[in-house]
Image (cartoon, rainbow, N blue to C red; front, top):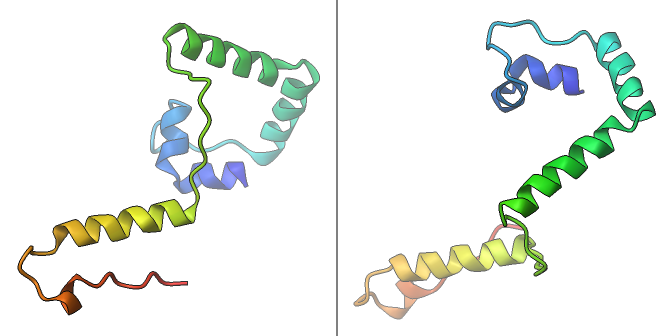
Length: 100
């Protein structure tokens, strides 16, 4: 699936510093390299270094919060209400019911 994403997902190509016209990896080559990365624990080392760099730049926090779909819908309703004209009648100010 990852190799398939490389064929059309520009974000993946940007992250890997790949040119748009450059051919993506062959799936068998990627599988061999993935196994090697896991065997030598390079993925964990990479992640550890990324976290250490983020910590040194004070980009991490000990605070924890969770955002779910209800939070996003609530924010959308609040923004919708703020966008309404202050003189609108009560029916116009009634928030739209979210889908689903």
